[in-house]
Length: 450
Image (cartoon, rainbow, N blue to C red; front, side, top):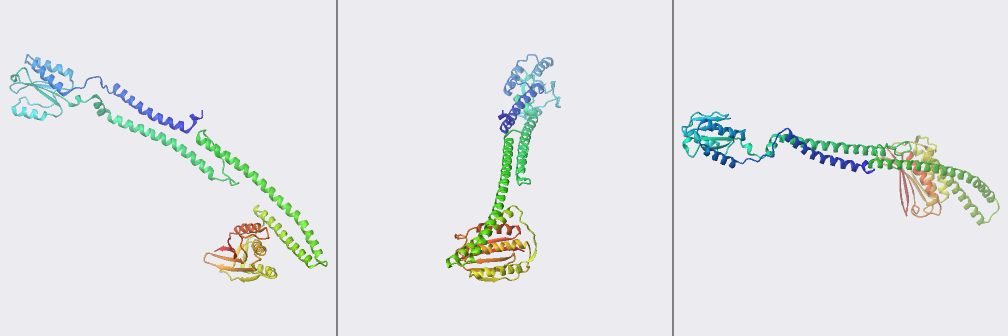
């Protein structure tokens, strides 16, 4: 069943084992105490007052005051209380019969010593009972002594004898449970870290790698789900690559197929322009030529964008003087803007380091796309400005216009592809660019960090 393979079942088993071990330890302790310790729990607990009363009663009942009679009395009590000691002092203070007396007692007892003995024994350990022999004081007294531990409950004596064993046993059980829990959760942590590592590692396609499933618990199910996700991502990646390849081939074929009729249209429009036309006819031919140029540029952008996204656009970086390069670019575009009636403002000041490691063809394409966008979308402002800017962090070229801004729609279309090409080329050459656009114009800054 799935439940018995789950982490929940395993953790519940650990808890059950911990509880069971505690119970079993109590049974083991009891078996040890009963079997090895020889502790008798069935015997009644001795009480001091009962022992004292019994000693006085039996002392008074003794009829013969001889060594034999007293010794017999002592032997009877010794059988009942093996740990006890007894002795007899007669009326003259002479120490007579002794049983199991381990301390050194004087052979002759004076009243002063007797008083001292009674004072020292009162309420102390061992428990001491002094009783007169017979019905009066003329026969002397007998003394009964026994360790006070015999009056303790059996369990108390057990804990005093085996308390350390019980304590270390409980500590061992707790440590065992902690170790088992630690090993359990360490295994879970290792598997989660392995899964996390698999999520972070990428193969050549940039996708996560599959992880090995060793168990069928919750983490194993998570690993299986992760592997399924990786397979689905890989399949999706393959489909996307195939679709992208088809799209690129379609764009390339369309671009090639469109250029052939476009060339024919351009040739026909040129032939028509040589004919005698009315003023409206001439304007129509001019608008047609402009549309042909725009369509040609759009096709070129489509081709370039397709090649760039496929990383097949030729890139050859080399060190060039960018100030001179941009001046040459502006020389090419100056007549175009002048023909359209633009106010042209150029302020190119040398940088601290004029040489940039870039591809000149790519940089030229960047400026061409930006200038074309100004002609198409910002012609209403009739202004273009190109200037340089130097800071402690970067050098930059700034292209400005006085158009209506990028948020406003333009009659010309296709600017999105041109700016996308600019973005890819700028970033590929380790440059950065910023765009500030408002209703009063647009400012584009191309930065080269020092």
